Every structure is written in C-alpha cells, then in structure tokens.
Image (cartoon, helix red, strand yellow):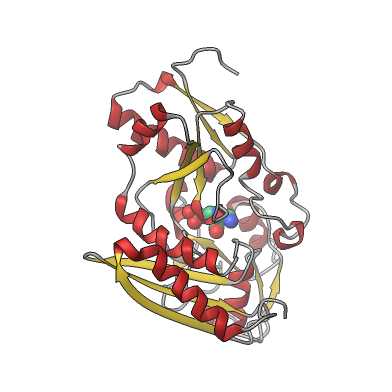
Length: 309
Ligand SMILES: NCc1[nH]cc(CCC(=O)O)c1CC(=O)O
C-alpha cells in the first residue's frame, strides 16, 4: 500500500459499473473540497461474488458476497473509504465501520432488456428469460407463470452476449447501472415501479468508512444526499425486518413527499405463486420505524416458510 498519509484510497470492486461509481465518488469529493485527482488512489478488490461465476448467487449463500473483502480491507486500514452499490449491502455493518453517506439516487427502475421484444407482454408463451435475481425471477413468474427462467450471471457485456447467442430471449438490468455506464445502445425499456417493485436501495451508492476516522467523516458529510438517506432508512429497515438480503424475493421503494416518506414493500414466493404487498407513510424522522412496521405486517401475513417454496 502507500505510505503517504495524505492520499485517499478508495476501495471498490473492479467491474465497469463499480469503477464508474468509484469515479463518481472521487469526482464529487474533488469538487466539494477542491482536492486534486492525484490525491486519490482507486484500489480494486476482488470479492467472492466476482470470483465465483459458475454458481447461482443464491447457492453461494451468505450475506455480503460483493462486500466482505472490501470491508476487511477498510478495517485493516488498506483503504480509507469503500464505495458500494447499496442494493448489495447487508443491512448491518461490521463493528468499527459506518455507512452513513449516500450519493443522490439514480433511476430506481428495472429495465426489460431484449433484442426482439419491447415489454414482458411481448414475450411468446413459454419464452426463456435470464436473470440471477430471485426477486426478478419471482416477480416475473407471478405475472407470467408460463415463462422459463434461467440463471444469468456476469456483467452487462456478458449478459448481452448471452442474449445475442440465444441463451434467453430477454433479461433485466437496473436502469441505474445502464445510465452510469452510459450504455444507450442496449435495447432496454424501463419498467414502471408499479409493474415491478425494485430491490431495496436500487440505484443508490453508499460510501463506508471507519467509525473513528473523523477526517473521512468530514469529507463525506459534504457529499451526502439527505433525501436518499431518508428513503434508504425506510427501505433498509423494511429489509432488516424481513431478515432479507439481496438474495430473497423482496421489493421495496420509498419516496418523499415534503416531510413525509411513503414506503411500499412486497414479498413474493420464489415460484411466483403469491405476492404480498404493504404500504404506508410516516414523517421522515420515523422512516426506520415505518420500514420495520411494514415488515412486521408482512411477516404476520406470510407465516413461516413463505420463502421456501
Ligand atoms: N446485484 C448486482 C447489482 N448491484 C447493483 C446493480 C445495479 C446498480 C444499482 O442498483 O445501483 C447491479 C446490477 C443489476 O441489478 O443490473
């Protein structure tokens, strides 16, 4: 590593999307504090999720598939801050780390991506769709039980190649990822959130630091987006209340209306046979309680074993 204490080391995964997010964070810090680009070092860290490409994410199991190695580097002092897709973040951080800085949220919607179809309803009876997301699989099967869903791992480029090779007729991507990568040539149609509720925290970037690092705390405070903070407080409390990770079929989205936060959350059986929804509103100060309340209501309705079948 470096022995220059003035250098800010940003830890990130190495995918094109992760690097774009790290660069956005660096650029916002440069602008907010008039720091030169030379003062930053981007440190690429390989995570389990990056290493294991031949198995479904749900099967590898464990929380923090895309984050654990980065958090270890942060705790070890090998990096000074870590940039994450909040969608991939477990609801609780290890002792000594704090995650309280969010960049302004991107488009929260999922995108339907298909070379020969514009929408889910265009797909022929029994068509094949590729996704590695249990949420998207369950939501899709809930609407279209006739479709066949196959596992689709890899980055955007890999998935586009699989579509071109005819492995599947369609897939889903987050609009946020497409926008951040500037991929306007991908045949993607945004799906309204009323048709497909996004994952908790989709489209949000979070920056994690060591709890006792006051220098970094001060730097990050200037780029934190408060509205995104309120929305994620509600959504992540909802996820926590369901003991969910990004590996369970759960959707959740909060929006702000003045000083009110409105939250909608849903859980779907993995086979798509049932989808339960709750929604509510509260003052932003009570965002986390709102999330916990909706989760408790859904837990009560679902009963044990809901996610098993
Ligand atoms: N699980 C992978 C992941 N984590 C965050 C994003 C997209 C960007 C975002 O939601 O901020 C993606 C890819 C995808 O869902 O297409």
